[in-house]
Structures are given as C-alpha cells and as structure tokens.
Length: 376
Ligand SMILES: [Zn+2]
Image (cartoon, rainbow, N blue to C red; front, side, top):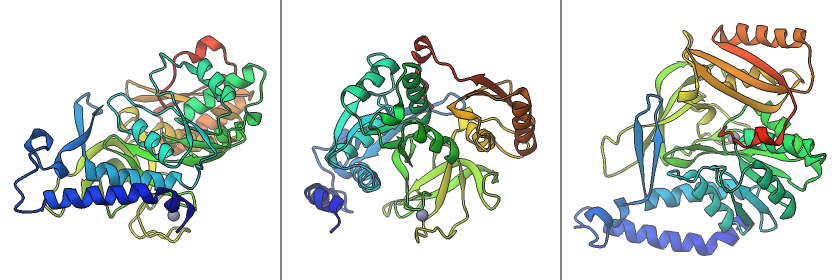
C-alpha cells in the first residue's frame, strides 16, 4: 500500500461502509430511508447544495448526493496526495459561499494530515495584505488559490522589499485555469512547483493531473460531451465548447447531460498520454461567461495567455473583461517597448482574430490596488 493509501485506510473503510449502506437502502424495491431528507432514500438525498450562474445570468442549483461527494473526495485526495504531506501548511483560498470547491479542497488537505489556513475568496476578513502576512507568519508551504491571486501576492511581497522565492512556499495548487507558461512563471516567483486541479460547479474534482502534467477526466464516474462544439485552437485535433457532464447512473437509462459553465478543449478519445492512462485529457479555458464568441469559436483569456507567454516580458498578473463582443486583456510587464507589445498584438491577431485587445501595464503594485481580490 502506498503512503497516501496507508494514511487514508481508516477513512476509506468508513466511506465504503456508508456507500454499501446507501446502496442497500437505494436498491430497487427499497421503500426509502424514513430518515432521508425530502422523503428520498439516503443515497439520492443531497448532502451538499450550491449555486452558480450561467453565461445568460440564469442561476443553476447544485445538489450533490453523498456517494457523489465521496467519490469526488476520493479523486481529490488521491490527486493532492502527490503534493501534500503532513509536514505542509496549506493556505486554501478557493470559493466557499454557495460553492463546493473550497470545502472539497479543504477536506482533502485535512485528510492528508496537513495543517490548513482557510481564507476563502470573499476578501472581507482576509484581504491580500493580511493573507501575505499569514503566509510568512505561519510558514506556509502550499498555496491553493487562483493563479491571479498567487501572482498578486508575489508582486505585493516584492513591493514590500521581500523575496517571495525565499518564503518557504514550495507548491502552488492552481484552482483556476491558466496557460502552462503563465502558471510556471507565477510558481517560479514563489520558488515553487505548479500543480493544477480542474473544478466545475457540480464537481470540484472534475479533472486531476497525472505525472505527465495533463489533466485527466475520470470517465468511469461520468461521460463528457460539449455544448456548441468548435474546432480546437490549442490542440488542432481537439474540440472546444462548454463541458457537459453526464453521471453514470445504472438506475437511469437517460441521465441528463448537465452544463458546467466551463469552456474546455477536449482531446480526441484514446489520445495516448505519456503517463500511460487512457482516460480523456481536458484543457480548461475558463468560464464560458468570460469568453468572447468569434467565427472560429469562443476565445478566452487562457488562449491569449498562450500567445502572451511566448514572450519573456509578461509577468504573472493577467485579467480580462468582455465588453461589446471584445476581450480586453490587461497584463503586467517588467519593461518592454512599444515594439515588443506591437509584436504581441500582431501574434494575438494572427492566432485569435480581431476580437482581442491587449493592455500592457508596467509591474508596479500599491497596497490599495490589491484590496479587490480577483477571482481568476
Ligand atoms: Zn496523463
């Protein structure tokens, strides 16, 4: 048994007993557990509620059953078990309010035996300067947060005259998508290795990374499809669109394909991965609501990052807004000339079309600028 499984044996045993009990209560002919909420058998009653907003502003409910939550947690723990040990002190700045993501990562960190500093993303009790102070005071080793927040923290640390690379943080767990080179540069500013986990509103551990650095979908848990598929841009053999998840439910012949609000590129089935796994590889691109439609399919900030970070100039901080069908992307640079920026704009135009506008700014950070924490 490997060390992670060894530490988790007690949890697994308890979970398996509960799942077996649920399976008995939820079996055909069962009249339902009288103690189950909403008069449902315990196995199909929700244990987690959440909400999220679609691109058109429509609010969707999330109801996760106990077996779904446990299987999600198994995936999360097994993935994070590669990077978190009982010696770690982990900051988790992932959404908590009406979201499953923060809870999922925090439970996984606890079950792996690490220490936890839970700061959420509301930015009221724990704004960025306070969070930075906590990182130094409690000798944090692992940051689990959106890449943009990790970049802002590093920039603020440097502005205060410190070297984030000397802080003791050795692992950055990115909870939102970013281009690989952007993520590598943000992690490098901390002297850390980058690791990525892909969440959707109804499934916090939708895809977890393999040893080759690819994100794999656990297709034994659910089937995947795309809404409004378009040709791949990052992988020319891939297809992009909003990810739809269909739970594998032996009780239902036609389970619904549920939207996730997340734009992804899927590599073709059975695309070989260096890790040896045959499960589907996914490239997350951010929220559908944050992308712009173009004649060749939607374009997101992550697509722009793939262009920007071919240059050594951009630092980690990148934000974007969508207005009037255009994607305006602001990014920090150390220096760079107008000629450098014109070359980047030309590259973006040739790869992504005219819907993207670049707004470089010189890397300077003032404390007041960090009070509004980005969600990206
Ligand atoms: Zn792999």
